[in-house]
Length: 283
Image (cartoon, rainbow, N blue to C red; front, side, top):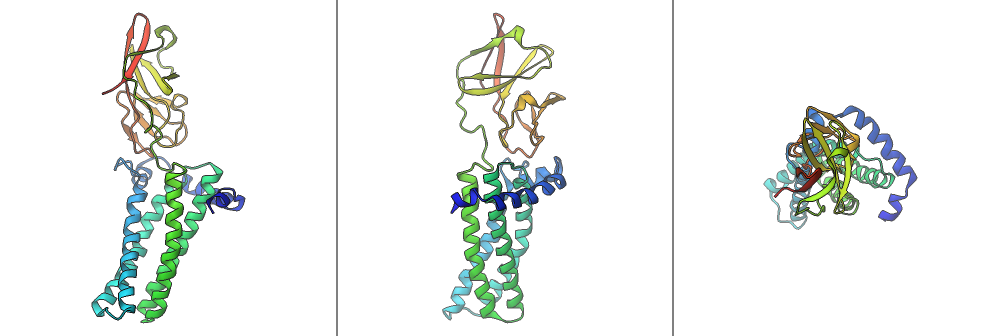
């Protein structure tokens, strides 16, 4: 199924139609950081999904208890309330997901992401209709809509897991970098001019080097957010700005100043010895 979805031209086009306006609406800044989870140090979207999924799953269990004849008035009211809570909680969950989705450009991810979004919209619509039916005391209809909504939600969850674990959406792009344990020569000090970011490859790792007023800084060159080449970005106030999505990192320690990145950049110790720039991973 995912193979066909990844190659779906209509879905990838639909993904672009949705993601581009969202990217313009939610640009770099406080709102983007809030939706991305920069403040958490972890993507916000997976955490937020627990609330609607948990509410709707719990409601389904209470509905099953009602069908089996073991539910009282309190259980029925609890199920109805949980369905409503899930619908409300789905709104910020969807906002965070759309924010993450707007950072993507790869057609296969856009296609699967569009399918994931369509399933989510359908699920929210079904549970909203279920809540309305329950309010009108049409319990059989409300429960039936919840059951269908749960099925659609399961498909959506599968696609969300595929995006994360098979396509790497939301994963720290530097998590598998091998540490450089010993001081390693990377280039002649004369080759590193002040104020000129430079990329070097050391032990298979792409490293950003930058010299300012005699001090040499070294960070992982691949942006932790989506793998953007940091050496092509701008240096502002001793902070590197990713050229892809404008995440900002401090040169001195790799910490995140502005999202949408949530994970810091691996940072290296540096020294100049015998005219050579050497680096090693920080302990």
